[in-house]
Length: 157
Image (cartoon, rainbow, N blue to C red):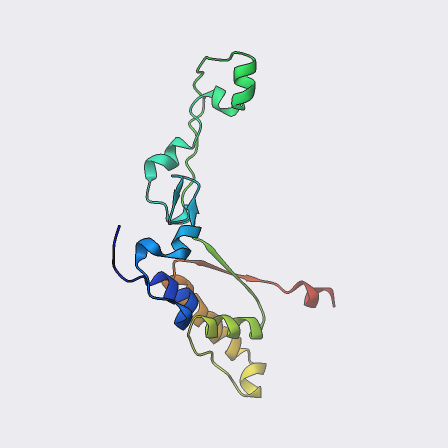
């Protein structure tokens, strides 16, 4: 393992981070990948492409729970007639409520200064449009797909 200083904790915890190396990082130890069964990263960061393809069934018998296959003594391997579709990796989603306060808060949390307009600019929706553009740039930097969620409480009124 590496003895370099850890930078992933600093991005999450800021000045509360205690000095430690990457191999001793408590946040990395919490991340678990269900694809390659290794601690240290999540499924969307998994580098093991072979493990991802092996997760897709090739035989009809792989769709049967192993306990039933043992109970009924199923040992055949029938190829599936259709080729299994290997899911393309999707970007992690960043959902933000579509209101001015939430968008401003997300920008501040990302270290970006939000645009704050006078009353005339707010009426022309310049503030929210510019802040959405800034938030989209941040989402692109972090490799996330940005989705604005409609506020359900406002729709009912």
